[in-house]
Each structure stands twice: as structure tokens, then as C-alpha cells.
Amino acid sequence: MKSREPEALVPAAVDTLPINFAILDEEGTILHTNRAWREFGRANDLELQPDTVGTNYLEITAHGETETARTAAVGLSEILEDERELLEFEYPCHSPDERRWFLMRAAPFTDGDRRYVAVAHFDITERHEYQRRLEESNERLEQFAYAVSHDLREPLRMVTSYLELLERQYAGELDASADEFIDYAVDGAERMKAMIEGLLEYSRIDTRGESFDSIDLEAVLDDVLLDLERRIEESDAEITSESLPTVAGDASQLRQLFQNLLDNAIEYSGEQPPRVTISATRDEDEWIVSVSDEGIGIDSADEDRVFEVFQRLHSHEEHAGTGIGLALCRRIVERHGGEIWIDSGPNDGTTFSFTLPAVRDRTD
Image (cartoon, rainbow, N blue to C red; front, side):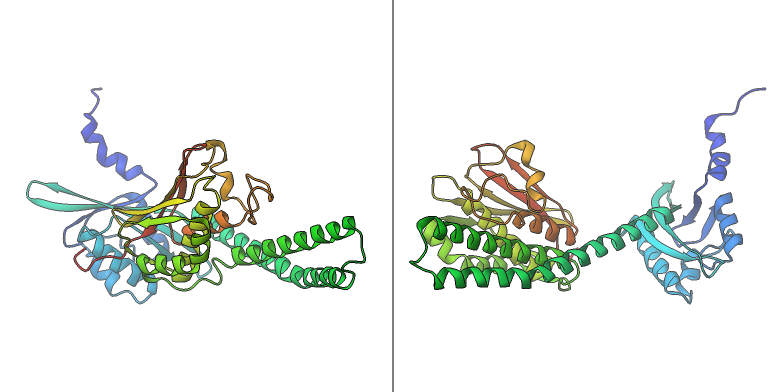
């Protein structure tokens, strides 16, 4: 028996795919569906999943009574207008207790002068459920960290108070060694207090953050430079900046992000006065912001470790700090949907770069 040409096998192959697949014209009319599309529609009796060729997918979703239908309608309209390629949405299945999540992916193509859209629905329910459980687990960990750090503040405050009382009441009556021991204890208690405050701050990044707004990073930097004015003067630091953009974000957290990175650059400047440069470049729908210094640098093997909580590369005697500052930076950037990374080397200076979502221009 003569084998068929590969092109002739495409319809049968598409019909056997375990993915809901359809071809629409540019108006949204369904021209072709595969078996999975039809079977899913019949099994769930969904207005979002018509199983008949000739039905206008856009009209059906636009008249749906559920929020899912309306979400799909808007997303599908944007897909047909070539404004987006992906859409995640939830299907209320035949059973009221069952929910399934799908990723809709669309790809336009042409045949002669006519334009069509190939639409595929991928079942991402397992991934979505895993993500939901992970978020719940992270939330419980955040609550635990908050509770522990909050409850430790009072006994630590008592320890610090009694140490300071002991220091004042017996000043001059104890020998040099005793005074030194008390100083060590007070210093340790103060460092622990700073670490607890940092842990509290870290645990609140997601739960206590403000809603996103259009934030002028120029104004954010001005506020941070004002807060660091004394530190900058004392260290003879020189901080220069290129023009910075407006981004979508939480103003308070972005101030903290810049302050932590600039404070870090000043602290690890080495023996020379700190020289720090801030720049930004547009990359499609986000901005890449970089904070570069000429300091002591970071070994490549430690570039990931510095973003972990309480991870320090130097002793307290060498450099002050709690080991939370850069971990906070990463947490803030991740809350904004971005990434943060390091370009550095020993004695070569360090550049911290991070991405933030751009504010869409009216002409975009």
C-alpha cells in the first residue's frame, strides 16, 4: 500500500492531539475543531466551548453570563486583533465542585489574501493547583516568620534594657573585662534587634505592600539621596544618575530597593571614596535599571548567595549589616514581576541590575 504524503496526515494528526484545537477566521467564526475540542464541549456543556463549526466564538463568549466568559471574550478579542498571544482562564466544568484552568494560545496565519487564527487550549490545571499550594505554603511561612520575629521583640527589648541598666548602674565599679563583656552583650542585642526588624520587614513584602501605581523613579531617587545625605557626605560618595523612567510599582518598596542598593555600594566601596552610577534602558515592556559601583566586587561563586536571608560575605568587624538588605531587594523586585542579578568580580566593582514593569504609553 502506497504511503500518504505527510501533508495529508495533518488533519488526522490534529484530530488525535489531546489539546483542544480550532481554526477561526478573522471575525472569530469557528471553521474547524478537533476531537478534543468537541468532546470537552459535550462533556461540560459549556458556552465557552462550542462544538459546532460555524459558531462565532467571540459572540458566544461576549454574551456569557459568567466572569470566566467575559474574561475569555476580552482575551479572545485581543487575540483576534493581534494584541496578545496568550490567555489564562478558568472553566467552571459540568460538576460545580470542579474547576479547570486552561492556557489559550493563538497564532495568526494567512492563506492567500485571507487571515485565520489557530487557537489551542492547554489544560494547565495541575500547574495552577501546584502554584496555588505553593503560594499558600509561602503565605504560611511568611505568617510564621512574622509571628516569630514579632514575639521575639519583647524579650529582646527586656534583655537590652537590663544590660543597659547594668552598664549605667555599675559604671566605674566593674573591672575592664566586665565592662567589655557588657559592651559585647549590648552590641549583640542591638544586632539581633536589627535582624528581627529586618525579618519583620522581609515577611511583609507581599502582605503589607501597597497597590501598584505609576512611579517616577527620578522622584524615588531624590528621596533616597535625601535620606542618605549624611552617609554620602561622611563617605565622600559621588552618585550620578542618567534619566530614569516612570514604572509601575509600589513607591515605598522601590524607595527601599534603591536605598538598600546605594547603601550597599557605599559600604563596600573599598578604600577609595564610593563612585556609583545609576542607569536605565527600555526592553520591550520593562525597564532594566542598573546600579554600578567601583568597589571591592563580589566573587562569581557568591553572586546568588548574597540574595539569601542572613547570608554575609564579611564579618561584622569588617562591614556592618544584618544580611537581609539584598534579600529584601530580590523580594521587592520579584513582587514587581522582575528579576535581579549581579555582574561583578573581585576588585572589579559591582553592577546590580533589575527589571521593573514599564508604564504603557498612550501611543503603545
